[in-house]
Image (cartoon, rainbow, N blue to C red; front, side, top):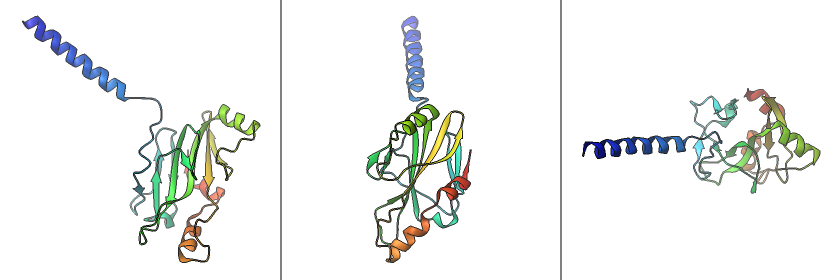
Length: 174
């Protein structure tokens, strides 16, 4: 009877260890794209622990930008290794989040192949190379198409949140 109890305990421990080991992965995990992470005033920036870069938020992004880990950009899936998208959202009007910026990481070899094939992964907006490190290329997809009437208050607010490639590059630490 003790042998059976000991065997069951060993089996339970082994099963628990197997379950825990199965939860870890070297692949980047993407969160549910429907869960918004609102950038609060206390937050200084976004830290991507998988790729290892930090994006320092512009001052005017506080309380109006939503961050999501997703592979979707402007209605299309991007075949990047890792990607985070930042959306403008007018909380006073409870508007739908509109994409502003996506930061995507590609393996160097894949990026070079994309360039040789002149393949635009975004569908509308060409990506800008922001930085390279350890055989990784970090690119920014910047939405320059204002989804609102440019003369409206909401359109003007959106336009003030759009960054240039140089602004994105200076906000990245890698």
